[in-house]
Amino acid sequence: MERIGVGFSGGMSPQDIVECVKVAEDLGYESAWVAEGHGGDQFSVLTACATATERIKLGTSITSVFVRTPPTIAMAAASVDYFSNGRFILGVGSSHKVQVEPEHGLEFIRPVQRLRECVDIIRAILKDSDVNYHGDIYDIDRFDLWFQPLRKEIPVFVAAVFPKMLEVCGEMAEGAILTWCTLDHAAEAAVAVGLGARNAGRDPADVEVASLLPCAVSNDRKAARDLMRMPIASYAGRFPRYRKLMIDAGFPEEIED
Image (cartoon, rainbow, N blue to C red; front, side, top):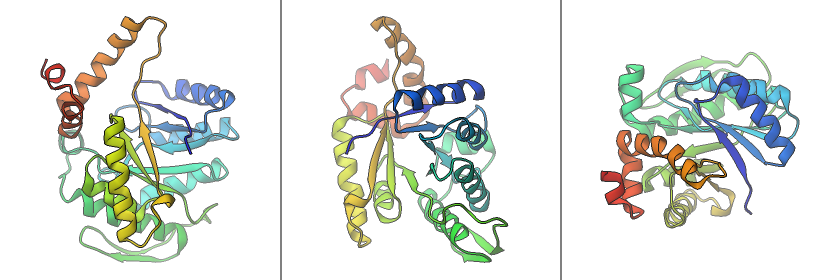
């Protein structure tokens, strides 16, 4: 089933995002997603969105498992879910080495394992008290959430580009988040997600595949194309994963330029 949501980046002020989410709800969009980067804190912005809306689902796209600990993500997710009356979707991902290391001063190591453990811990905290977890990345002793979450099972979507992480989505998440992808890549991603689901004994139909499609809206085609030049150049220049996606999509010369 196809459903349409809308996403917002850190280039907008927190109040502008709230106002746009209110409009999106009035227009019938199913969901609104707030990115993490250099803008306002996404959980704070989503809490404001939650108190200003009634129906639209609200999600993070995405929260980095490197820059927040699993307990802080669990507390934030439970809080937004509470204020939204159960409309929250937690989108998580590993982010990128070029963001995690120079911008946050952290080592970008074992992203797949870190994401697996982080999701496991978040789910345990939402369901149980006195959580103990001893993995390859995290050692947590007796963490207890001091209020009752509205929902003990908040949907988790995982951002992924290549097969290994896409299979993780199928194994343990309610959904996969794609971005900057073509229809062909989306189809290939769905196959990888399905493989991960079947390997984990799950029905692939239970795992949603969502795609973020960056776009510019204008009555002037040239103006819209000009608006997209900077984000395309930024992603192609900074992030090897997305650069490869764009080249594989048939734009090697444009990317080199």
